[in-house]
Image (cartoon, rainbow over all chains, first blue to last red; front, side, top):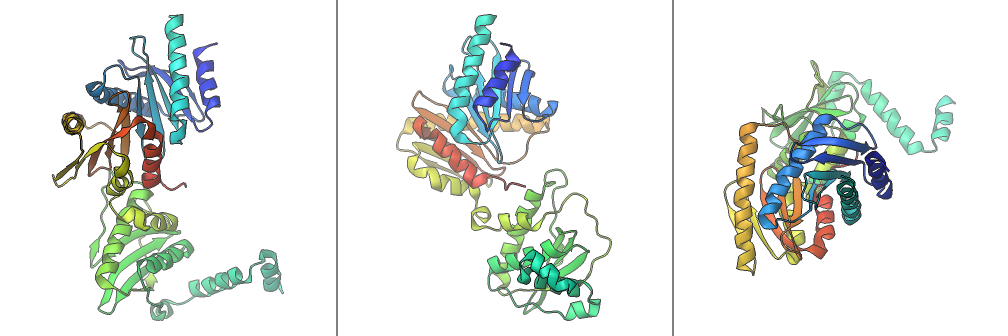
Length: 118
Length: 269
């Protein structure tokens, strides 16, 4: 299964998820994206920047933390980074807070599979 | 015959009567409009309801006045079912040309200003005063539903404080930093408050860096959450003015984030 298929599968498993993107947190690049509509590149880059910034805060509290969440007025961004020590990250956008655990679990599964395949 | 057939078709005679009244009103001369009086709104909610109805039903550019016993307190320009301009006591409500570009921000600012006016003046009459000219609909406008939404009590109070009030009971400790420089702290565990202090310094430093770089960011309130320990989550919530850092049991994360959304959610278009 390709990375794009896995991202599509994640979105299908969580109906409120409108975007699932795989990227590299060190460079801030979104490499593969599955979305319900076309998100602008600026938005994806801003999301990556926000992920890096929030993980920097999180590292101050607990270094091996792999999940951070950023809620805005109309969406919830869920950022999951790889536990394999690389800079892979999955960023998801959804509407409901109760979906956070399921998104986090599915995103971590994708990252584990990607690390295994590398 | 045609009129009664329409009424039957719509199945709502009251709506048809209202439409007929509106059509008659649209055809009135300026002098007649000036003479038209409205009953004073008993409170702020009634004022907003009446004003929202006027906005929703006004297509051609019109100027309205809010009148107290002392005279005209505020004027509003409405066109194409949107509030275009609000002027209170001769002072136009100004919006930040870069930051306040969306209808939500405009509605929030207008609702706050109208609320202050209503508290200051008491009973206010809403009256059409003339047809408005040279109306520009570029940028800063809002529709009636936006104004209604942001006139609700939950939106007029400090929403970050409302969020803190709602979640205080389950919090293990918090720091509230307001824009005027005041900081309030709460927490039975000194260690948690010290950790939050340390985190707060880093948050301030990040905010200063952002200010220096001046990146284009998604505006509006945000709430970030991440683990502090295996059992506790930290929340960093900001509304553009104030900042709240709080710690919650990990089991409460979903509940607290849902609470955030209830307080800060933007109305659906």
